[in-house]
Amino acid sequence: MTTLDAPRHDILDTTASSDNYLTHSRGFLSWALTLDHKRIGVMYLIAVLGSFLVGGIFALLLRTELLTPGRTFVDADTYNQFFTLHGAIMVFLVIIPSIPAALGNFVLPIMLGAKDVAFPRLNLFSFYLWVGGALFTLYSLAVGGFDTGWTFYTPYSTTTTTGGVVPVLIGVFILGFSSIFTGLNFIVTVHKLRPPGMIWFKMPLFLWAIYSTAIIQVLATPVLAITLCLLIVERTLNIGIFNPSMGGDPVLYQHFFWFYSHPAVYIMIVPAMGIISEIIAVHSHRHIFGYRFIAFSSIAIAMFSFIVWGHHMFISGQSGLMNTIFSLISFSVAIPSAVKTFNWTMTLYKGTISLTAPMMYGLSFLFLFTIGGLTGLHCATLNTDVHLHDTYFVVAHFHYVMMGSALIGMIGGLHHWWPKMTGRMYHEGTAITACIIIFIGFNLTFFTQFMLGSQGMPRRYYDYQPEFQIYHVISTIGAYTMAVGFVITAVCFAQSLMSGRRAPANPWGGRSLEWQCASPPPHDNFATTPTVGDCYNFTAVIWDEKQQGYIVDRTLDPDMPHSTGAKPGGHS
View 1: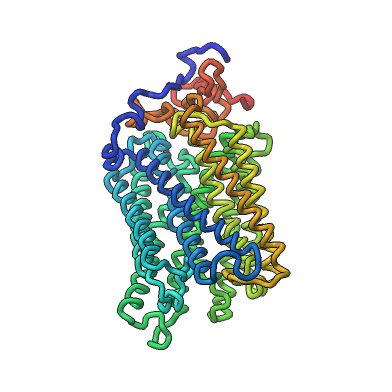
View 2: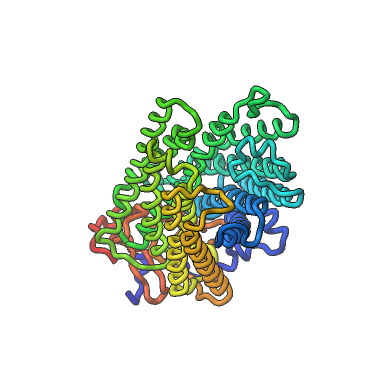
């Protein structure tokens, strides 16, 4: 298409507005005190990526130490602090807030056609709570660090002599409140700020995922807060809550911790699933298959997440009946995840697939999440979990779900919405190359750990038998390969900000509302109330050579007001 017929087409402003959210006001205070959800999302993103850099450095230090048996360059106590810091930073400072707080803050209100979230001041307060929690975590390093593992299991956390345990517990406690307030804000926003015509089943699936995640955040996180308070009280006042010598029960801590932390797994993974739904639909230019099944599966996962914590404790001494019940429920939670995977695959079937960088991350997610899910069945089966528990098999499974799925989904979402966030396009070839390197490096790092675990290599150990060295060498090579991929990604984004071509309003041909405003968005997101239609009807999307972006032909969209009701044709 080379000519434009204004009455027929929705002509989008493809130029960056002089009053977009980046240029609306300048100076440090204009950002530090902003109530604009987009700026808060960007500040979260910068903070999360900075934390990811620190957590990644600790991961490389771990893998370097494990390159050879015995001491490679640090002693056992330092190694314990390395893996504790890596786990705590990556879980509490990176993966949990990366999608809901960072990408969710930026995208959710625009997807709803709203000017902001329901409570902008609470949104800014949540960010500063996150900063406060992060500072307490850093302070713990200055007072001796901590070596309890990221789970803070008793009796390690109550008997260790390192001085950083209480500060990091306070930090995670504060981070929990940030998560609760963000979830509450998003629930109210979805309920109250949807535009006219956007009923529940016209919402993009990313909003369903964020909504389900917010429910988990609000209901599960207080349990973690109470648990950490009890742990602080026991450590500071010497009260026997978890200490068996004083009448306490250390297994009680595990129940409390995993009652939060297994739902927390879905705080990490469900938003990534929402991103993948958007990426696969948009970049295959095909209506999402089984929309309602995917939407309801997000709610089902949120519900199941509260009743499966016991599968972390099959060897903790709980009764055989409880083990059997938790095992059955753990198998059941695979059903909604399988529904999503099947529907994503069917969406790709006969789609017009564009192998863009976001789609490459989407396809990587499908592969890695499938491996993570299938290996989870071994951990949910009682007789195999007894052998695999506390081995590297669990480490590999955990990373395939958390990093290979949640973090890869987040990076794919960042590539998907980067043009909208910055108003600049990145170099596709460089981004795809980085994705392939990360994919190869990830599988080198963690697939070999399945073999380590199945042969009995315990996790968290500083030393190991010589016959395991070849696997550790391959795993370490993979970790450095991944690091190269992430560095290339960072360079790609930096080059985009400095000299990338200007992004059109709709570079991918998306139909959800965030693609109906300019790139980057104006301060108030929309000059007028956007028109709500079927956000997955791509038959009405047409590529426009002049604007180098997609536009929407209203005559091909029977779901839009005032359309001719023409039947959709083939895929563009």
